Length: 418
Image (cartoon, rainbow, N blue to C red; front, side, top):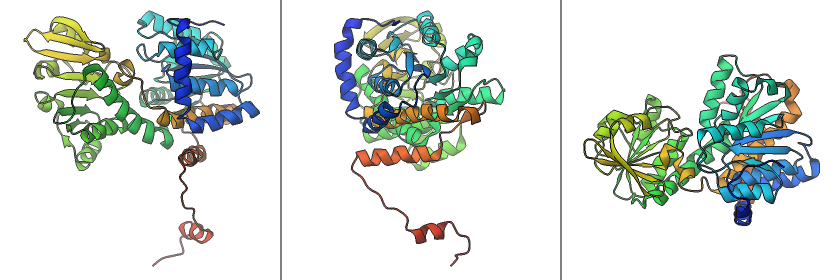
């Protein structure tokens, strides 16, 4: 079995952590149990470009138990948990090519290795795997029946490909499932982002001014959690509806250039490039901290930061001090990459339970319906979304009401009035 991990001897620690995460993923466990019996993915080759974490390990085990042959690589150079990668290989017999801190060349080498078994399905987080296939490995496209995409940034890229008629196979946008974005993006990103900031800085949120750039579902989560810890939260936006929503949710809304001088901590969660640039760095107060929780490290313009740099040093793990030519010192966390994974452990397993239930059932859906699907981006069927929500409620010991036959007739009829 081929693999490339930091140290295979780390496997025992990784296995324990994988088992711990599994305790908090009951929905995925139910799917895994069914997959073990039915083998809906038998003979299917899957290449997964995902954050190599304890939760991803449990997804991979579920897919393997469903009959799939897997190869995994990282979707971010700093998101790999090396002990987990080792355990995936040694304890579960799954090829994994992933090392935390890998450079760009190693990152793409690992993507090529993950594609080497000529996949039938791709599972992506950010669309690097899909774009590599379309631009560099087109000979492998003939083997593929479909793919899935985990995150907002990747869905945006894929919908752009669909619009340009460049997409060569159907993709299920798992991120568009309500049991994914309403929970993973909001509660997962909100909690894990602050966890990453705390581990990198030991920052006190109470009484501090926190600037959240972007008020999508991830931004809503970050803003809400920061407010819950007592921070004075400002939101910056380019969308007037989202800006209005942020204001009505109780947050201050301002232009980034106007709030730069006041912010103690800046968090970007936009999915766009050049959110924080030279003019913002120069305007920041001495001691300002900034980080990114969007998928790619393009939201903070590090090239422009280097242009105004006098000196630089790592002052804490995942925290770099930049002394600027104007004499101020400001602090970049996690190299501008996903702070929740570069400095912490990513989302809690309890929320990834639903996200990876979506991934598992989306893979099964592709196998069952491949012939009917066109070369475009799809949403996972609502009935599967509802099934996952129901399973999650059941695992939490929660029961809910049901419509009576009379109520069903009422809401489906147009004849009833006042």
